[in-house]
Structures are given as C-alpha cells and as structure tokens.
Image (tube, rainbow over all chains, first blue to last red; front, side, top):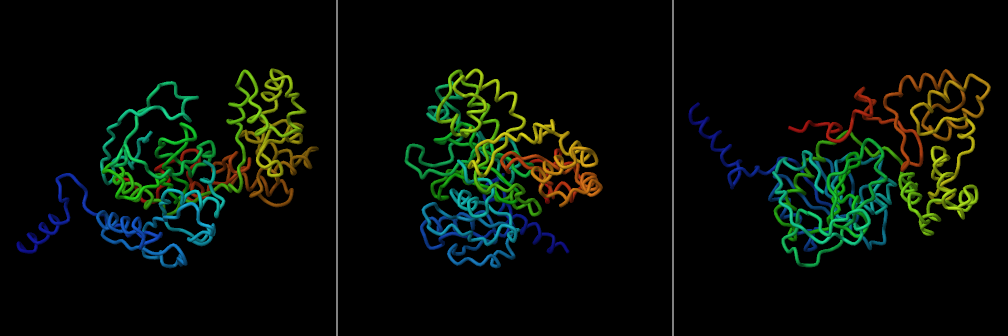
Length: 120
Length: 294
C-alpha cells in the first residue's frame, strides 16, 4: 500500500508542470484539420502536442467529419484564397464538435454555413 | 481589448502586460488617444505578420455570441478578433504557433479549453447576407452633414424619397420617428425598408410588447394584419392564424424568445435556454457552457 501510494504521488509528480505553477498537459482530445504537411501544419502539430496529451492532425481536403469522433475539440485551419468554399466540416446542422476557427477559417465557414463571421 | 473571462486564467494565466502602440488609423474616429494599449501576442513585434480576420460586433445581438478579445485591425475599434458563437470559437489572429509569444500561445490554449465546454450551444440566428443594423444607421444619421456613401448604404431610394433626404435635418427627424418600423430587407440587399403594416399596427416589431399584442389581435378586427406580421417576424411560430395555437406557443416559449436584427429582424427561440428552463436574457457568456468553469 505504501509503495502504491508513492507510485501515485510520483505519477502525480510527473504529471505536474515542468516549471512551478505551469499547468500540466490537458487531457482534452484535440484534432487539427488543415494542411498537416505544411510548415504551419507541422508547427501546429508540435504546439498542440506540447499542450494536450491526445492530438492528431488531418488533411482539410477530403476531410470526413466522421473522423472527428473521439475528439473533444477540432481546430480548423482554412486560409483565404481557396477556390472551394464548401465546408470541410460538412453541413452546419450535423456538426456538433466544439471548434476553434483559426485565422480566416471563421470567415470561410461563416460564408459556407451562413452564420456570423462573414462581415469584417 | 482582452475581456475578463475564463479564457484569461484557465488553464494558463495570461500575461496581460500591455505595450502602447500608435492608434490605428481605422480607430481614430472613435479613439482620440494617439496610442492604444495592446497585449502583444507575437515574438517579433517589429516584423510583418499575416493579416487575420476581425468581425464587426454590430451583428452580435443573439444570446449565443460573446466577444473575447478585440485586436489591432484596419476596420474599427469595436471589431472582434476572438469571439464565440455557440460551439464555434473564432480565433482571428492568423498566426503559426511559432510566431506567437507565450501570451499568444496561452490565449490559444485557453480558447481550446474554453470552447471544449460548449457541447450543447449552437449558432442560432441565420445570417445569410448582411442585414444592416439600426445602430449603424443611428451613427450615419448622427452626423451634422450627410455622408453620401453611408446614406445610400443604409437607405435605398424609396426611403430617401419618403424621408426627403435632400433636407438632412428633416430626414434625421423622419428617421427618428420611423426607426422602430424600419427593417433590413433581402430584396434591398440588407438596406432598410419601412414596414408600413407594422406602423399601422402600432407596436414596434422588436419590442417586448409586439408578440403578445399581435397574438391578442388574432381574435379581433385586426386579425389579418396581426397574422401577416406574426408570419413576417416570427416565422418559427405556428403556421396558420389560429389564436389558440399562437397563445400556446407564446406560453411555451415566451421567456426563451429574443429579437435579432442581424438575423434579419426576426424573433427566435433560444433552444439552449428552453432546454435548461432558464430565460434567454439570463443565459449569456460562460453560463451557456455545458461543462462548468472551475
């Protein structure tokens, strides 16, 4: 029992911050949907891995919304200048995942889904 | 420009140390100070960075929207850089994480944490195209001299004629008198039309009194007019003109209804408020999260 307690504390210790006061990595499951092989996509993958235990990157082109199952948050990276303004996340009413829209992704999704964000 | 809220401290405490920057030209009509305080979010504060996307907040007149942060931009001091609508969080700073400093990275992580809690909230209002707001028209008509661009932007020819815009002082008086009955119209690409039927009815469609008055009128001499106005302003209500049906709908939905100009001057039901049995007016911001903020 004592050994078990020490192991638990050690685990807690390893989950704690590398610097005093900094939060540990989050257990949220985060999916980046963008251009994973681009320098920016690679940077996002590295950044998210540093802050969240469970992360994955997926290609926005041809993205199947079903692949967001099992994740808590999706980050959509969708730059302006793309010809295709069809939502990579599928129809609005079918999309239930909390989502962060990076940069101009909000503008493009607002146009596709006819929600706020298209005027600015 | 970074508002107080859970995103400031959870999970990271964001360093809100500010620096002063020259007031952007686009802000200078409302910000008289020659400099503004900003929280830098980038490592290289002297370098060039991609322009992000900011959104005009005039449109945020529905309960599921909230502003998290403004930002330096080329449009207006009140535009939002980071904001939420339902389960969608707009992070308008168009940066790679490599470009962000610690405050920028922490803000993004905190935003991920924040939006993760909104599993039930959804965008409510329909925003196809731009429905102009009366607040914007108020600004246009507050000027001592007409700005031709904005006068024509807000007021199509029929309205300019009705208000006799060539006499600016007279037009401003006309606007004040008719304002409660102006609404954005799709045929006018979001500019205003005067709802003469609503004027005849005598209750401003956006007012809290409108729906109960129109529903009551379904049983009287003005039933036809009331039915027309209910169809126009509450299209999600019962079909038909059955007064009992409308009364039942009103009884069921009253506390959860809100009027949105940006949603094309309509009454909407706030589904999250209705689901939780909390009046929509009380269910704003972080209170709409499904998972509590510790």
